[in-house]
Length: 156
Image 1 (cartoon, rainbow, N blue to C red):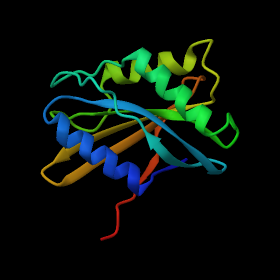
Image 2 (cartoon, one colour):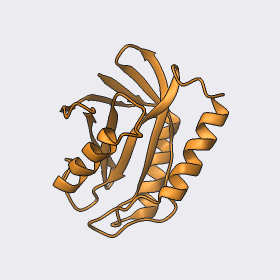
Image 3 (cartoon, rainbow, N blue to C red):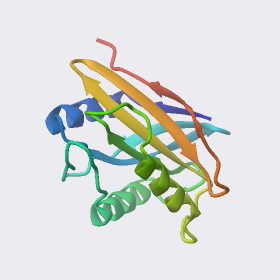
């Protein structure tokens, strides 16, 4: 599986990370399926309320509103535009899912109301001007693996 973060969304991500500083921050990933197992994140949401230096908690109300806005804008064409997953920062830790992160994603994809076939977890960290990132895919069958994440940057 390949997931690409569009350049404008990378800029949005960098701005959010700079604002959050040492606090964890996160949101959702929405986008377009380009080909089988090939996705482009066209919308990265940013939760307005950051977490602490060691924890990020999803604001479910904001997440629901962000989802509704995305699906309305893409005219509910779910086979092309859909939820891809979640993201959050680890400003004080490695960009690898914690036990809590992995358990949360497993719980999400195994929930009876989850309509997808997978969810990606992207974890990022900004050190000075260097963005470090990693992404993992989780599916309802209990599989999880690292995926190729391409981060596009604006060309100056």
